[in-house]
Image 1 (cartoon, rainbow, N blue to C red):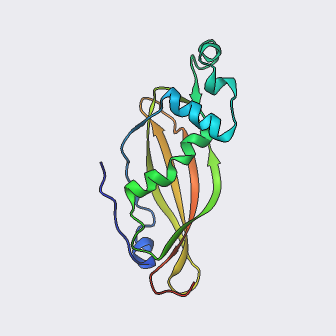
Image 2 (cartoon, one colour):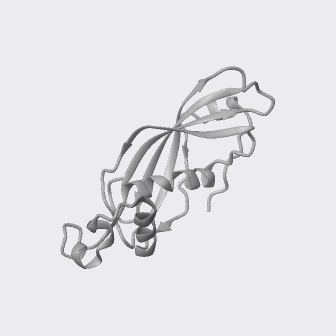
Length: 159
């Protein structure tokens, strides 16, 4: 497992622009997790939860929800970069999310991340854009590519 980097200033994050972080460890997609995600989001589309019907479908089995994969991003980011050096590190949203390839049940996924931009928002605060690439073992294309936006505030900075 990767030891997370521990920046404590906006300047330290800015120094990471363009550098790839990761990959994280592998996470295996199991049907019980897909079913739980379907229950939580009320998205019970057959391609995700009906194992018999999905076996006859285009992927030969169920696939995980794209948003389930995306939801792993925060935990994977914490594997790569610890945020405890800041007074606040908040999820601000996403600019762009794509799911180029489905994620079949039983597949393993991990994430790589690159800090794409650091935009100051006053003294000691910045909006940080991170490109997250989720890859599945044995699948050539990424299964998710997302531009995540976070808002970071240093200890002692004006909020």
